[in-house]
Every structure is written in structure tokens, then in C-alpha cells.
Length: 156
Image (cartoon, rainbow, N blue to C red; front, side):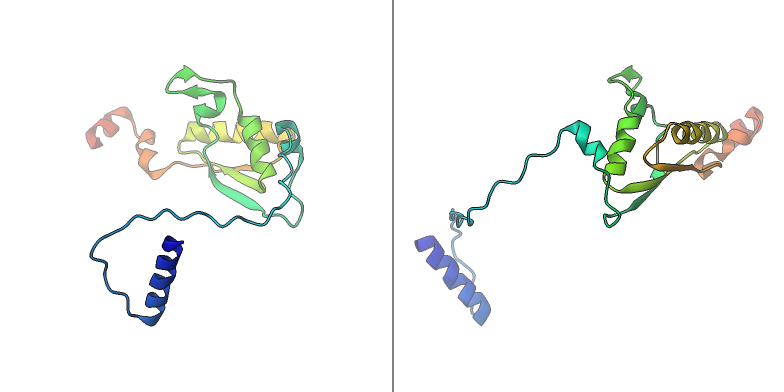
């Protein structure tokens, strides 16, 4: 076709370093070259089987170093409204199926540290497919929480 010939000419000019800028731009629609016929890929397994298909020992292994699993979205709450059932267990099962072996649950305050430890212990006791760990501490942006109210107001 004419479009293919124009493209071949342009490629040859590019290789030779003799391309001249076009004075007018033309849009050309090229048709795709058909690929050799191959059998269609097998259908994906049902969702119930996808979780059971844990990665093989040679599959990729990951560590999530900043898992914000205390976020209310995992309890199904978005902007204060209940949007769906809690799905933390399903999220962790999908992560394990994708090769996540360890996850570090982040906490930014003393209270969040307590909640993170509680979550990790509960998930471990329940046979969580991802080995959970937790940070314990205070994020620098929230360190004022430890000051008495009067001192905090003075700084803020």
C-alpha cells in the first residue's frame, strides 16, 4: 500500500540521515499485520481458586515495608461511610497470591502502635498467609501528641 511505502521510505531516510522535515503532516492509518494463530490462553481460575494458588518457591517474593492496614478502608469505611464489608483477609490473601511474604504494618502514634500490634497478633493467630510485622513508635509529624495540651497549643 502507499502508506507502507511511505513508511519504508521514511525509515530508509532515517537510517541514511537524510530525513527532511515534512512541509505538511499527513495522518495515515496502518493496518496491523495479523499474528500467527495461536490457541487462546486458558481462562483465569475462579476467584476462590486464585487465592489457593500460592506462589511457587521460584516465584517472586516481596516484603511490603509500609502496609497501612489500620486504614478504615480495610473495614469497608470510606470518608465515614460504610461502603462494603471488611475485606482485610481477602486483601492479604491476594497479596500472598502475588508473592508478598512479609508486610510491615505502619503506625504513627502510640495508640496506632498498640492497634498495629493487636492486628499483627490477631492475624498471626488466624493463620494469615502473609507474615505480618509492626512498627512501634511515633511519626515525626505527630510527635506533638506527647506534649501536654498547653505546650502543644504554644507550639502550634
